[in-house]
Image (cartoon, rainbow, N blue to C red; front, top):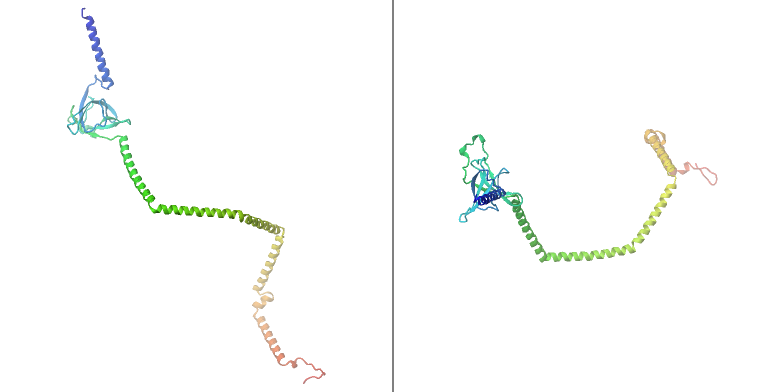
Length: 304
């Protein structure tokens, strides 16, 4: 057993190297005991994609990015090598999308499968292992928000520039000066009005208040007199008088009484009219021949 010690050291070193290799791949997410299939994709811009990034289908991780190769002599300089589980076959039409992995800005690969009838899929319809898959880029949420925000900020800046230009024109023009002059004049007028109001408050308002107090006192006296007056009896008397007038008017309308007979009895009216005419004729004849009706003589002799 001359070389027993060297053999043990060699086995220990080999074991350590194997454990180091296994641990390193495990930390990278590579399971060396699980076979995988490799595919490739070509990109113009990786947007920060790194090796060992996740490869998923509909949010489920099925593999990882094994390597990123580049050749800047080509337009699409980056070639991305991915590996996925052997139990997953990619149908024709599958696309390798570069997507954002969360809100922290990391990137990942999302395999987008085409919509097809599973019964119609044949083995020849799957992508061969090691083939190149068409690629695409899907902007992330933060990038989309950032783009919209930048557009809105640019629009706001343009509006602010226009507003500042208009304000500058107003400041440099004569309109603002005239406005300030008008404001100054209005301020002066308000100062004068305030002084006049102050003077009125000192000189006129006390007399007005005194007059108002006097008027209120007189009104109170009138109210007291009205309170002391027997308004109820007065109203009763007025009501009795109104009732009498209403009864009188009712008699007149019904033809009763002297006024009613006079207004509605035509024969009475005619008799009174004839009496008036007779009296008028008598007065006329009396004026014309007074001696016919009055006999008077100083000597007591009657005229024939």
